Image (cartoon, rainbow, N blue to C red):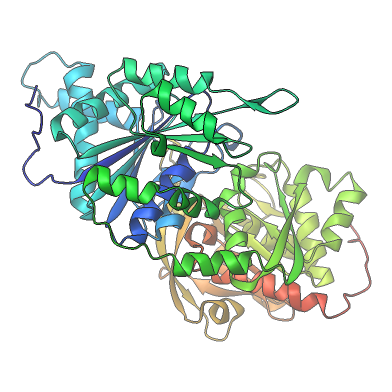
Length: 556
């Protein structure tokens, strides 16, 4: 075991670990992101690593109902949705090195063992697995040049699968020595009873579990519906052996973007600066406060219908939700999201009426046949009634299918994902996907260049003709149908350098744009994505003009 204070050559970074206790879903990711924003406001170079203790190598094969959205990083890594929060709060683009999973760590250790790199030693959790975890954290610090690395540990303290990671972080704390590592523990303080009495026992037990494995928290972030009373904070301080100023109350907020300021108001930035010997300069939140002030302005309201197949779990579309929040923070117009299950549309006229009443329509990505006919109905309604429309990935592909069926008369038009042997495969499998059998990490993934047609709606929205966007798909618009689509009025206005179709739009429509890529992944609070801005602006403009006479599509 290295002596206390030992640091590998060139490793002088400070580390802040964020863990959670009692239950999952407390907002560790938002806490971690907000701490990153506090450091960024002080002009301290910072980056974040997310630890996901599941055996999957990445999040790519996981059902959204189990784990929410799959967030795609610039290098094509399919990651946990918290990586999206990190990018949005820090304004940084991260890569796969920033997301550690048990599967990724174990695979690397086993591959090294197979190559004989352990020189015949028995390979064990300690020191080999924990050593690999520490190496990954150090490598991220070196690659990014960060002075502080935030590490979020997924799950809750006491989970069996988290133990190797917590042990690695305990070892790292021992190696770095005093004043170089801080532990932040996020925990639940429930309010029980008719008078809403706050209970501290869950926090006490959670901290005791953490201390039992050799980690003493320096800061406790207490989550609950309401602010903690001073006597409750004092009680937590006493029983959990932290100073009173280290007990931070973070009640539920109307916007996640309020949390950095909530932490700042309670002195968290100064506390961590003193604890870790960081620069104590005055933080700059000017742009952040401006965004929040506009977000709260409520100058107008627009309703955007989201028609998808996972609408019961809004986290499945988290980046879309945040992209609309960013638009609200730019325009000061409240964006109300109306969630509509695509499966309901073919059988429920009321659901279709909700699409008709909406100011705009978003059809996001997805896979498979379930809900596809409902998406087609919604897209046809948006196209025929002049409702501003944005189709993303699968929504883009469905827009081509809908147009081919109802404007070109190709009644059998479909995607081969649904009908492999159909007469008119308007959407087909990418050539590079032919013959692939492994599911994980094999799609067309990550940042890819896109060339836009000058003067198109997409180019006008972006303000340029060369862009880069993130992708996650196996299917594409069939090149054999592009000329027929164009002749009918659905024009390809964006292509990859190799010619594949990336953007389709209707010229004679208020706003009808489909994109093969995922623009939601690159929207930021201070830089909302141009396509979401354009969609909401089109919806606001439409409110000022009487819509066409309402009529359900003939096939509804």
